[in-house]
Length: 230
Image (cartoon, rainbow, N blue to C red; front, side):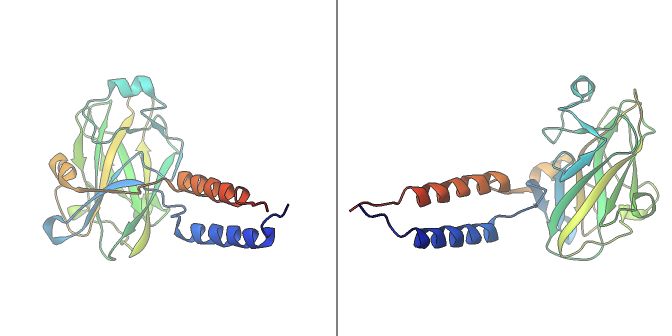
């Protein structure tokens, strides 16, 4: 009885794993988004619940009773619901260009107006370099910064990886602010639900973690299952 050379199989196993890791998109947070080219620019449309990291902010899945009271329809499957201050949600995405950025959010609240969110691009200084989006009330509306013309971000887009952060500026029980979708554009626009629906869907075909686990299992099975006997 003779088994195939284990050292050769181990070499193939290691090389296969190495190449697999090169092509698995690790750490790309936004897994589903939309893109458009309105007004001669480029826009990315991101669900507020497609975050890389979240702390201190609920979602419609964790705040089910509050979500039941939120006006429909949502453009996203789920929404952010801020019950208190001190939290944030981070989003990592890719931009094909660098330069000026203009930002808007589709938001609402349970108060009838008067609450607000920060959104900041490529900075952790949301109070100093972010835009303030004041909530309009129970009805969802696309809102830009109340003080800055065209809702232009103080910080620019980078070509390649960018990070946006959403932070509740005002939030407390009974008047929780809600966040559905935000868009970042290279040109000033006036976003609408129709613009979002017309934008082209993009996304990762396979979640990185799932792809890694599946490929790892396949390689292991091949490695263990190729012993031969003579």
